[in-house]
Picture 1 (spheres, rainbow, N blue to C red):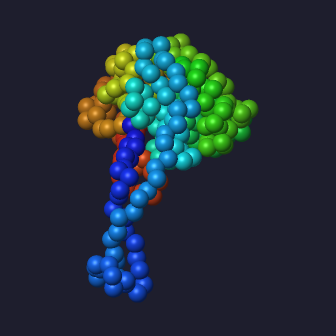
Picture 2: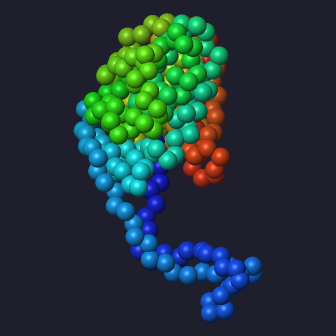
Picture 3: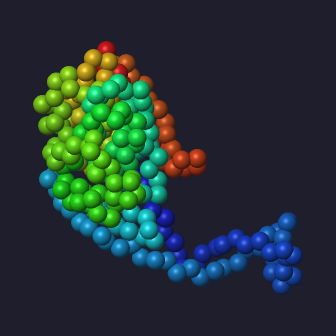
Length: 261
């Protein structure tokens, strides 16, 4: 899921307020002045690197306490902007019955798993599927505190495998499935993930769900025809726009939801 990493020159324009306004500086109404300030930018530090089976180069980088996962230098997800990952679980994990079983495809930074665990009953199970072993290790290491150690929850079951394979092998097994394995139906990072969004992939998701089960699919951008494709394959579908950062404007993403009919 792409996020914007701001870049700056060392000399940047900053805004300060003086009261009273300094007579030696040009002012705007209300005593607002503008000055040049030299800002020392901390570097991005590479914490870990990995190569996915399809050849995508993954990198975990840190800057001033913020972590970002990049894929072939494209920022995918950030500990600073993760509200849409939390919402991915909320829209399909609320009001689940005792003993429910849910599945999350793609571990990312752990926020969707954490959100699901906060919503499902105490006797439910959350199956977390992740293909890349290094991503798992990052979530057991430096990323673990950000989502409050979701892999340590006794309701979490970690499966290191291809989510497409796990879905193909499941039949009437899950109450909810959450997919955050790429940029959505217009897959940009992993070509192997594009199958999930085809008719065959959606039919396999439907078979993996229990009657009345729900699926939520994260997407970086809108895909106007995707809800129609979901309906064609046996889902009561809709799309929800969500912000990347809670209570702020800026980047918005889309979550496609579907209930098995």
